[in-house]
Length: 319
Image (cartoon, rainbow, N blue to C red; front, side):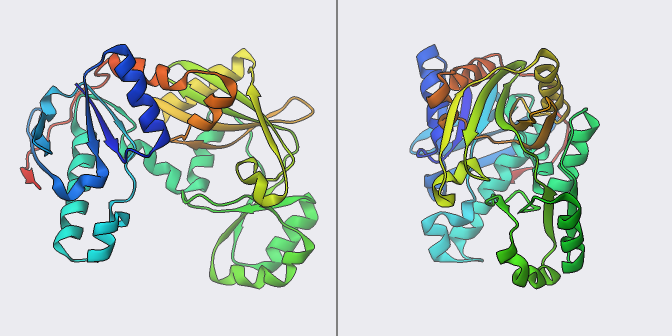
């Protein structure tokens, strides 16, 4: 049995669900919107056991051979948000989330992806260290609360961008003269500045040991938000040199990510820079333009079943 968990409106989750159904794979879809109607129990010994029940259906967790996890923050569910912190709804929804995350760490099933493997994405500087350790270049970076350091960094590198340090998505923007007066604000919030690297963006999706590459042409600093930056973005299927493709696979495997979205840029001189590794990539936009069947590749990987052994722990947990 393959467990899918998340809201039904999530594009990648819906695409993988359709791909699994096309393969005839047994699927249990756990609708996160119905968290308050979902009950679960978890027992952990030599194996992670227990069950999840929703709408009269019960899934024995010991029967799960693979799971694809795309949950959103349970605290943002409309019923939970209205009830507020400390309410029964809040405690139930967050407790269910904790239970399923705990199971996903301890189960011997194949999990795409385990929360512990996704955690380094919460610190971009830490992730950059991991990226460099696997042979990729990364842009010169400054994280500071000192406006004068920012001005000196810009004087040294010329074109500079700024973006979030955390895993929270932010819009990458170019630092310009119009921002000078606002630089005083960095005294209250550590901010990340990077050397702007010219070149062509490539989004690489690694699924197991398979690599899908989209080449991106954009007139915006952040191709994801081109329309907001008065620009345009075009996607097409791309190719990587063999050594770069292998490096991407090794990087994803080292980070314990069966599925990963890796952001690369090739400079006019042929150098490859890596900006970050997305541990829960929204691949549907890319495959719609490239024609690559990333959803089918993830479905096949899930059908392969367990890839690791369980970790022993003993504590009953019920929701």
